[in-house]
Length: 428
Image (cartoon, rainbow, N blue to C red; front, side, top):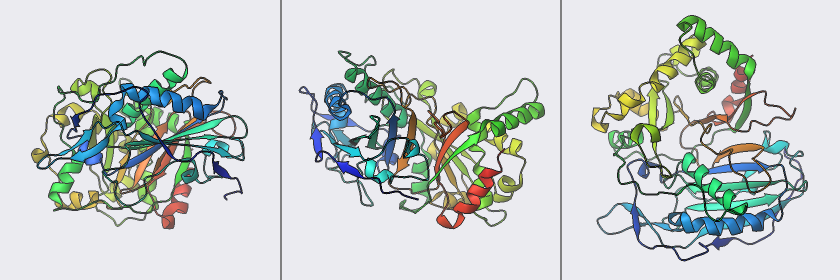
C-alpha cells in the first residue's frame, strides 16, 4: 500500500554539460549495441550514509566525468546511407534533484511493496520509442529526511551495458571524492572487437519485421533464502559428484520453474530461457571499454520439463548452457538453429523469460563520499519481454541482514502475480 510520502523536485530539469571542451565527431555502434537502442533501463542506488549537499556534489562530479565519457553527452544520429551512430555533440545529460518527506527506513530502502512509486525517484523517457534527440543518460538525486539519498540513472541501453554504466558511475564517485581523474581510462569504441552474433537480430530477421512493444508485467521484489540456495547446491553436488558445483546465479535463475508453474502455460510448448552474458574476457575487449559487450545464451526447454522437472536438472540446463559460451560465439547468426516455434515464442511470447544478472559487475562499488550503496535496484520503463534480474548486489532486507539473493522481476501479469509469489514462498 502506497503511503502519503511526498517527493518534491527541488530543481527544474537541466542539462549537465562536460566541464571542459570535448572532442566532436562520430562514433560507430557495434552489432551488440544496435539491438538495444530501443531499451531504456534505470539503476537505483540507495545510500544510507549522508554526504554534504549530495545533489550538488554529484552534479559537479557528473560534469567532470563527462569530460572523459564525452560520448554520453552526445546524441544518436543518422547520416544518409549510414547506420545509427553516436554524434559527440556535447549537448549534455539530463539532471534533476528532489527531496522526499520520509526516511529510507520509512520506504524500506525501496523494497516492495513500494511506499513511494519508483517513477517519482527517476527521470524517464516516456513514450513507446526513444527519440533520436533524447539524451543518452538521465540522472535524478533524491535526498531523504534521514540524510540518505537515492541516485537514479536512466540510460539508453544501446550506449552502454550495466557493466559499462557501473564503470561510469564509479568514475563520477571518484571525482566526487576529490580524485583528479578516474582511475580507469574509458574507451567507447574498441576497433579490435569482433562482430558478435546477436539473438535479437536473428529474431528480428526471422520474424519478418516484428517489433517488440511494451507489455504490462507486475513488479516483483523478493529475496531467495540461502537455505534454498545452499540446499540445491548440495543436491547438485551429490548428483553431479564432488568435482562439480553450481553457482548462486544458476540456482536463483532456476526460479524460471516457479514462473513457468505460475503462468499455467499450455503443456509441451516452448518455454525458453534467455540470459545475458558479459563476454569481455571471451572476446578480449580493451580495459575500460564501456559499450555493450553482451551475448544472449538460450536454454531451450518445454513447459512440462521446466514446470515438473527436478530443480537440479533445471540448474544443470542453465549451467551447461553457460559453459558453451565460447562455442556459441563462434557460430554466426545464419548458423543459429532456432525452430519457427521457438522464434515465435521469443517474439514477445509470454512463455519465455529473459534474465540479466547485475552481480559482480561493479554496480555496488560506487562511492560518492559516504560509502557503498545499501541497495541497488533495477527498473524498466518498457518491458517488452518477461524479464528477471537475479542476484542483485547489496541485498538489504528489513531485518538488517542479507538473508538470501535479491531478485527483481517483471515477468508475470497481474493475473498470475499471486500464484508466482505462492510458488516463490515454497523455496525454503
